[in-house]
Image (cartoon, rainbow, N blue to C red; front, side, top):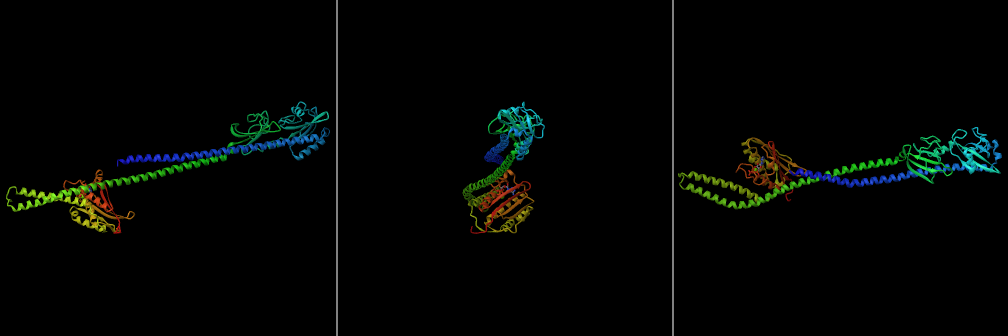
Length: 559
Ligand SMILES: Nc1ncnc2c1ncn2[C@@H]1O[C@H](COP(=O)(O)OP(=O)(O)OP(=O)(O)O)[C@@H](O)[C@H]1O
Ligand SMILES: [Mg+2]
C-alpha cells in the first residue's frame, strides 16, 4: 500500500516524459515543415507579384513610348511633306489639323512658328496667334535638336500642358510645327496602370516634378511623393516607403523623354492570398498541434492505465505466490511434525489409558492422592486429544489429497453445511439468512472439500458474531467470468485493516489460547486454489465482514 504513492509519482513522470517526447518528435518536424513550406510559398509568391508588377510597368512604358514616338514621326512626316508657305495659311493648317485629329484625337491645338519665334499660324481653342516664343526654352531646344518634347508647363495659356515641336530647315530659313498634346489622353494612358483599390501610377521628370496627377497625394507640377532617382536602364522593382505606407514600386525611364514612370501597388492588397495562406497554415498547424497533444495525452493515459493494471495484477500474483509458498513450506513442516509427534502421542495416549485402567483396578481410591492422580490422567488424556486434533488437521493439510471430480450443487451444499451448525447458531441467537440463486448452474468440483471451506468460514463467522447477530449466505453466478460465487457475511466486529493481510497465514489466530489453531483459513485458501478458484475478503469493522469463495463453472467431467 505504501508503494502506491511512489508508483503514482513514477507514473506521473512517465506520463510527462512520454508526452514531452512525442510532442518534441512530432511538433518539431511539423513546425519545420509548416514554416519551411510557408516561407517557400511566400518567396515564390512575392517574386511572382514583383514580376507581374515589372511586366505591368514595362508594358505601360512601351505603350507611352510608342505613343510619343508615333506623334513625333507623324509630325515629322507632316513637316517634311508640307512647306512653311502652305502651313502658315491657317485655313490649310486647319484642314491638316482636322486630318490629324481624324486618326487620333490626341492633339489640343497646332501652330506654326517662324525662325524668329513668331507664332504665324494657330488652330486651337486659345488666342495664341501673334505671340513670340523667342525667349521660350522649348523654342531654343527645338531649334537646337530638331524635335522636342517638353515637360508639362503653364506657358502663355496659364494651363498645364506639354508640347511636341518639330523644326524644318527650308532653304536658308527654318520654322517649327508645334502641337499641344491632350493631357487628358496622356493622363489616362498612365492611369491605366493604376490597378486595384490602392494602386497608383504617375510620371515625374528629372527634377522629380509630377507630370501627371497621381491618384493619391500630390498635385500636377508639385514635387512627387517619392525620392528622385537618377536615370537608369531597364525596370527596377522594389519595396519602399511611400508617404508613410510600405509599397511595392516599379520604376522605369521612358526611352524618348526624361520621364520616369512610377507604378505603385499596395502590398496588403496584393498579398491577400499570401496572408490567406499564412492564416490557413497557422490554422492547420494549430489543429495539428491540438491533435498531437490530444493524441499524446490519450496514448500516454491509456499506456499508464495499462501499466497500472499490469502492476495491480502483478501485485495480486505476488501476494498469491507468497501465500502459496507459505502453504508449501507449511505443508513440509506439517508433514514432518505430524509424523514425529503422532507416534509419541499414540504412545502417551495408550499409556494414559493404561494408567487409568490401573488406577481403577488397584484399590487406591481411598488414597489421599487418588483424586490428584485421576485428575492428572484426565488432563493428560484431554490435552493429548487436543494435540492429536492439531496433528490430524496438519496431516490432512499436508497430504494435499487430490480433489475428486463430481457434480456439485452449490446451493444444496450450502444448505447442508448450514444444517450442521443450525443448533449452535440457534443456541447463540444467531440468525442465518440465505439468498440462493435459483438459476445457479452446477459445476464439477470436490463437494466435501468445498464443504470444508464453507464450514471453516461459517464457523469463523459464528465465532466472530459471538452472540446475537446475523450471518448471510448467498450464491450467485457470474456469467461473464463463468464463475460461481458463495458470499458469507456477518455483522460481527470485523477484521482490522492491519490484520486483514495476515488472516490466511497458517497459525494466525486472534482467538484465546487453545481455542483456535489458526489453520482454518489457510487450509481453505489452499483447497480453493487447488480447485481452481479463489477466496476474497472485505471487512468494514463494526459493520460487515464478507468472505467470497469463487469457483470456476465447469460442465465437462473429463476436463
Ligand atoms: N468472520 C470473521 N470476523 C472476524 N475475524 C475473522 C473472521 N474470520 C476469520 N477471522 C480472523 O481470522 C483469524 C484466522 O481464522 P482461521 O479460521 O484461520 O483460524 P481460527 O478461526 O482462529 O482457528 P480455527 O479455524 O482453527 O478455529 C481468526 O482468528 C480471526 O481473527
Ligand atoms: Mg476458523
